[in-house]
Amino acid sequence: MIDIDVLVLGAGAAGLMCAIEAAKRGRHVVVLDHANKPAEKIRISGGGRCNFTNLHCTPANFLSHNPRFCVSALKRYTQHDFLALVEKHRIPWHEKTLGQLFCDTSSRDIIDLLLTELEAAGGTLHLGTRITEVSKPDDRFSAATSRGTYRPRSLVIATGGLSIPKIGATGFGYEIAKQFGLGVMSPRAALVPLTFSDANRDLCKKLAGVSVDAVVSVAKTAFREGLLFTHRGLSGPSILQISSYWREGGPITVDLAPGLDTFDLLAQARRQTPRQEIKSALARLLPKRLAEEISAEQRISGRLADQSDKVLRRAGTRINRWQVTPVGTEGYRTAEVTLGGVDTAALSSKTMEVKTVPGLYFIGEVVDVTGHLGGFNFQWAWASGHAAGQFV
Image (cartoon, rainbow, N blue to C red; front, side, top):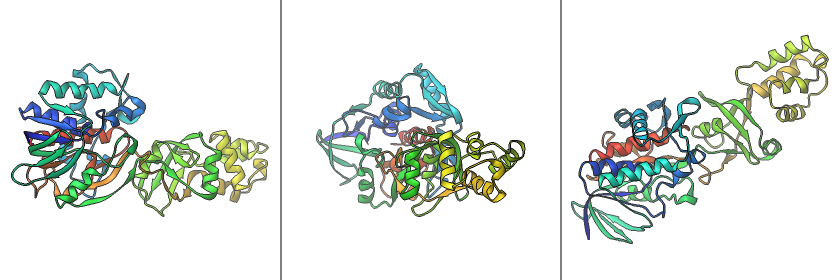
């Protein structure tokens, strides 16, 4: 039996942040992970450069059955707080579009930051450790592992969600939640490419590799970012964003020429250059391959002078209001995060502690709080880990 103050299960962004904060308070902290390397999701994120936070982070950038739950933690540990930590470690960084912050060199810099902070604070990390059973027989928890049985006063579940199983993602955190009587909001893949069937899949396959600025919407939610055609459907930032809002069986609406009224522009071109081929006119608004495929799909060809308003409106609708119904997503294999998770109604928004099980905490992706694409999910990891670290 190994008596300690705090046991953190999961050596990802949230778990390491929590362990650092707890160890700074003089707590005897051990972090365990079944993987052989820490923070694999950090390592592969942002194309290997880690989009570690976002300058414009607000509670509005998160989805949850309780949208207010994230407010407290995000307010107490902001994007500016984490950026100060990055600068303390002299990690070079840069801002991309929409406030996204990335490492200049490698995501390894963020991992090294966390490991350095953990060691300096006196915390211990053990990798390649299998956890076989968790219980609370008395005022302490009991965690049977391949390294022995730990008896912590506080147990923190930071085991993430189901996304990207090849780096070790499992549903372990949800199992622990259910074991202790907590509800789990049905998990599903989010920030994930959408797939299509039949003619739409054929179209996407022909256009694989073509990218375009687009506005993609579901009901009243819309995102304007890049869209990429793939062999199976649609990807790119705008599609990943809307995937968190899309539900099976429903359509998405795509504007392939945002800010432009395609019908008006085609009608104007018809007056000014009536002998121009309509395909050429469309290619002034869209990538050439996309313009050609839409022309073929809509069966429109010939000179602009020969096109009626009805034909031009049909083309305009297809470009500015393309409504298409995905058949599904590429699933957890490529999903950046898991939507859903441990019901926040069971947790204190201030401490992340389970209201009915003193000493038990859930943080990070395992909780029903999911950020938009662009560094927001890492900020939730830092903020929720920091919040729990002040109280464990």
